[in-house]
Length: 347
Image 1 (tube, helix red, strand yellow):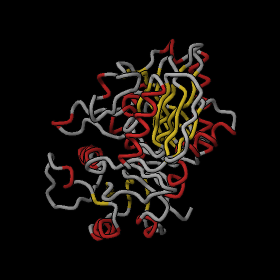
Image 2 (cartoon, rainbow, N blue to C red):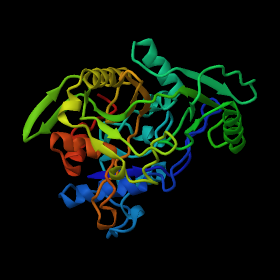
Image 3 (cartoon, rainbow, N blue to C red):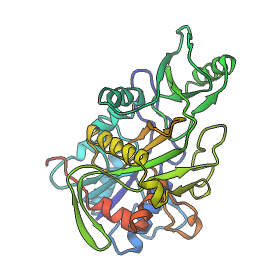
């Protein structure tokens, strides 16, 4: 029986950096997952006996020690980690031979949710990333590069806190506002703005998958078809909670997918996923320069997994579920294949 976990509390501060929390702690996407599995006769454990299709919290358990134990008491043996993970997360207390997990290792997420650390690793391994500059509160700002420039939190979430600034005055004002809010901690970074097309690539871990009714074994990480983004707001793709992804995203067509640049960036994304030791899908946002060469600019260790499983949420496709359609998967097919990659902590 499967229990879907959602984020109950803010994660711990790491080196003065705070990852913001989504209102509801991903209980919306957790309920989408639970309902889709339930609708397809997969056994789901829920906090209440007769969950309401409209109430997110009827379908998901808080990721606290008490919440996880409650799920176990209700028969759960598989935990879907639809939450923000970190080292010492309560789920680690339940890493034993009797339980299975869908999601990343908390200790790995703890490291690579730090985008500065992740960028450094990718660059050291020959993967194209934009030029970046670390800015710490209290330091003299001495940025001498080109504008516009992108200001980003180090432990961000989606496009929250991300801004495009066009000159030094806007940069100083934005940094002052971010540090004053204390929402993202004591450091942010500046990232080279790339003017070309933006795409997002969902990378799946190695494992056995069902594609077009045939079993296929992947020995390394592999990419779902890329999704292109458009209708940016001030140069930044808006957060999907504000603008549904179906309004500003679409699969690349076959000719676009087969271009040298797209093939190259997919290989870079697969290499990145191997470096990050993924156990579940990740989503990597990429953008082209003026020559059409793609750079990896944002690695998301927990991609959004919303889906149209409930009548009131028929427009809630995620970028990953949109990508899955490119190989013939619907929302359930994506979730079922993710479930098939479940792991134990003692392997």
